[in-house]
Image (tube, rainbow, N blue to C red; front, top):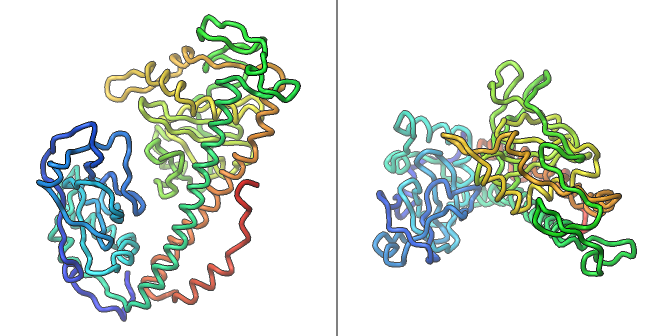
Length: 436
């Protein structure tokens, strides 16, 4: 698990303090800049703030103040164990499932990676108490013996792994910007109806003829139709079905997709041991969305996305729409990513334990069907955006696999820092310029 030449000492000797957050419920408010953080907010080295994250007052924070700094490492110790984040000056108050390790130096960056080792994660799980909800005690963290590498060793390891993480995050950032661009184009063409007319001018703004649609209670371009998600000329609902497959595939539940990014470390299944609910394989030219209420997650499988077809099985928490023509995909992606779609889906969701939309209710979600070759033109304009997003996802998968392979090899001395740097240098290829 670690290089034999490194001495080991209890973790508490490397830290000025190890503790956790508030054991109790603070008073929540809506108009504060201070967020109440627990273990589920610690993801991939960052404190993740969502719309569901609670807020507290400055007074509440002062009563439960914990001094954090750039050498702090936050660790999830309740429920999901071992998730981590660095502290970067965020205005936060910690709950009991978030432990803090205030290291005496920036060695916290090394332990961020060391704690990701499979053996360390297993240690956290094995020493945790609780049968249903696991809890990692502060004492088990404080007494955990960890290796202390020479400064040059740890700096080199951090430099290599951090560079891979930085490239992954850059790709994610580019993809977020590209998705935002695609959403803006969808809004401009199909919400504002300012797609290019025959003269290349914005249709509605240039006086294009609009007609009132009673179902939508708004005007739409002349000649356009309105169907619904269950019955339209663009898509078919994909019925739960699975064909035989060989080897392992990644089983994606809706929880394994965050901000349209896939968790490649999700559970692996074979055809023989798959769970009964794991019964849908992505197909080419399809769009998938989470059926649950308040769950906005979308996967796009375009003509270029064979990786998804080969490697994933989707849970029935997803609904799939098979596009009848390849140039419908980008439009359907924009449709299910639109806020109006999400509002209607949530309104139609029902269920005793978990509210979700069913196939019958999809007949009540209206879908505008544009006239003529509009969708071909939209496809031609947006296909480069979606292809670049897909290529970035594939590169991130390759970078993640390389990082996960290098991590234990660097820690146990099977690969030196110099050898790793040479491997990265040989693997590097000129990147496409952003925007091309």
